[in-house]
Length: 163
Image (cartoon, rainbow, N blue to C red):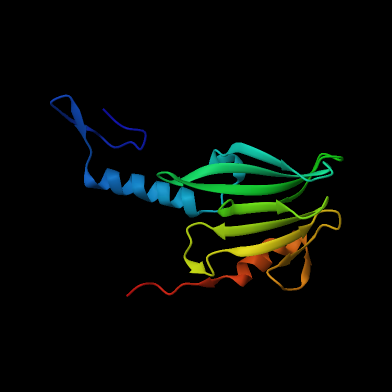
């Protein structure tokens, strides 16, 4: 009998025993799927929640995917409900929203982190003006939403590996 990876299974007493190489392949495949920047359709995200702005024009949509056993990543996107346009969505689905708070009818404050968390600081704050399609990371300068993912990446410092 073969599994979906083409490896042969050894059947003993009704149980299947897979070799060490098969386990390594499965672990490597799961790790690569988690870390690679795959299109969102391949991440099997589930839409979890929609958080409306006070005026109702803008909304934060949250989709989730399980990065590790019982460890979920909550990926936010911003919608203009009047035009049905997505005004911002992360290209990298490892960005996770810890909190979203509407400060006005068009301004939302996010607390974000990035899976797997091997960076400093642990979270970043982002203040987005949906009407102007601009954002400020922490207390920095204003940027267009199209640039914000790169600005967030630059704000992180990679943690040194434990020796």
